[in-house]
Length: 631
Ligand code: WTA
Image (cartoon, rainbow, N blue to C red):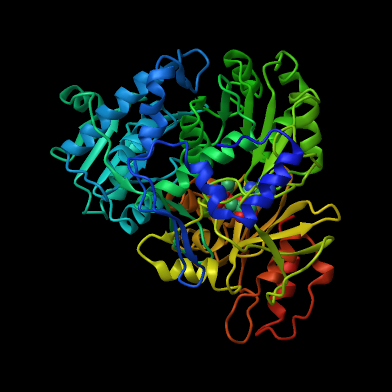
């Protein structure tokens, strides 16, 4: 695999990847362990869409993450686990140990009927068993669908249902800061509506009392005693599914983004090594939860494919205090640190006293992901954490892209605060206007699309290929549409400006407004609601909900509280509205469509420029909403 080490080389590799993509990617793929080499590198069209990489190739990704390293670095630490409480002992797991744990748990899954192609739902806290469960699925060719532990029972049930999972892997509970999360009881609630699930494997973490259903629920710790630590890896085709990961869409139902074995493997390792300029022996810490794609690609798969030491942190940045990240960096001598702008902003707001006690001198590279980073937060991170010597890689990508698409290469690409800079080799960005006309040259702003497939691109949305086509490949002919707005400045640098559709990024988490509205509407008094985003200093975007109360309740404050509880219950605390306004109507067009543009302006406090409201069914409603707006 070619590690790019200079700007000239970047340009040369980029050119090659565009002119001879198949040769370029075949070179990157050559260094992996394949059971059988591919016979064709790429076949594709974006109309189906139908994209296949490394056709005919046979492999197992866990052989590349684990077995391959045993001879050379079997005793090297593969994973450092840092628990929620700094007073609890963590774990260092070597490649040899991780290999054995994965094989054991793979045998447990097999014993309970999991086969190649079966879907396994994983709903766990950030404990090593989570990574083990992910890799164990991959070992036997079962398709993992990890659901973020912050989602509630109804979001979990939707996802279990959509993927028709038969097995759920969970834990009794999880620790997050000062809170205990009762994961198993959430699973119990979810499974009331998921009769297809026959086995639930439960890791013990918090020791909270749980209800174990006879014949269905089994303890992880008991089960692994009954199996061997030898589990030959299942032979997978390059295009067999590796995992499903649900992401929010403009409609209420989340989409199961599907990634396959070969292309994803090649792409995440290539991007991991090049973007972060990983050197053998580096300790790499990605703070994302494995419930999101960043955790899949750059906590589990990318670092392990590269033979790195990856850090998994169970807790939150502010527990026991806002110095925790910096404490962990010093403790484990982290070299590369990758986090979200929202975390940086919240720690910046806590003041430098939490940073000062720490040396942070092991750091070499810093990264950000998940949302645009504002220049102020970038400068703070650069100065106070990176001590002005660590390059920052602002990495732009999506669940659907599998890995990073636009990003500086650490220490190689000249950075500019707020810019993801240039596309990685193999990535061909295009900016178009709303009508789909390509915007040529520099100094332009439009919608970001990609013209050519890269190995980590989404293959389908689980169980509904048409949805994949309609969401990503239909808006602009022969282009993959990202849903993001983007500017290309005079230097050809890309700056992502944010979503142009009805999904919003709250603290770096992608949430569908329709999904939140559905949760709000579960409240018995709310007949209809509309959710929009408004700029928020720490979270990037906050959630503003306009809700129609059918019964005209007088106790508005308690109603608002109930609405928040309802969202917590049905979707999870990450979707909790920051502002709620009870209204008697919503601005709608004569055809009944909610005019979100107007609501967005009101939420942003820009009521002087609401634009033309004459086409509304009832313009008076706007006046009422403006008067009652929550600022
Ligand atoms: C946003 C997360 C600006 C963007 C990996 C994208 C970013 C969405 C950046 C995908 C960045 C991600 N700068 N915006 N560096 N990285 N985004 O699927 O809107 O959770 O479409 O994947 O996050 O979110 P997702």
